Image (cartoon, rainbow, N blue to C red; front, side, top):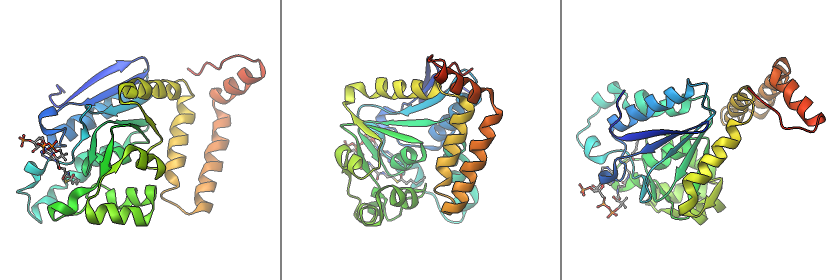
Length: 256
Ligand code: HXC
């Protein structure tokens, strides 16, 4: 697929996806989301890649779903078309770790896209918000659920009911992001983080991602049971032998 609204670039074992629709502050229209899904799937199936970074511009990670495209949507046609299920949810099906590197606005669907990723790294310029209430709607790509799980009910309610934005420092205090870095270092830091992850056992990485995500889906007992079963399954991999032998032999492990 030829991309018009995103750009891709491989840096070592990290697949970098740049949202690239600057005139609309990376508003997430159908075409952009289709291209993003295609690129994510491509990197997920590429054995040379161990982690993926999604980023935007200095001004905006993404200012939301495309309001001009949504304006004339009607119900039930939109429900039958299922545009959110068809394109947006692809992000949640990726097996490799996906890092959102956020500078500038991450609003509405932009904030939801960041929250669908596994790790959010924020520039000190980042601004997060769910302003859909100003448009007479509510978040539609998981915002009411993922923001609430990340920052708790009171702050999520305040943001979703008023549309107030959160700056990077508040987002870090509220556990919405893993870390805040200077804007100038954002991509380099995200790629470095991706490289660190890509250097681990790809089997352990994929299982760790799935196990952490289980915490959102199950009871504690079921989640712990899932963790135990998958932990034990890793003793059937050469990576467990390599990792533990390397520790004992005081050398760096080589996970192929
Ligand atoms: C379409 C958008 C857009 C969006 C910005 N633009 N956000 N176009 N959809 N979500 C366009 C503007 O129309 C304008 O184009 C250009 O980008 C620059 O934006 P400005 O508003 O002129 O910039 P600025 O004054 O700096 O304000 C930045 C901003 C503001 C605060 C981010 O653009 C804004 O409030 N945007 C909308 C944010 C929002 O409501 N997002 C939630 C969308 S609903 P022109 O051609 O006029 O110059 C959503 C639901 C998701 O995401 C549900 C799941 C699918």
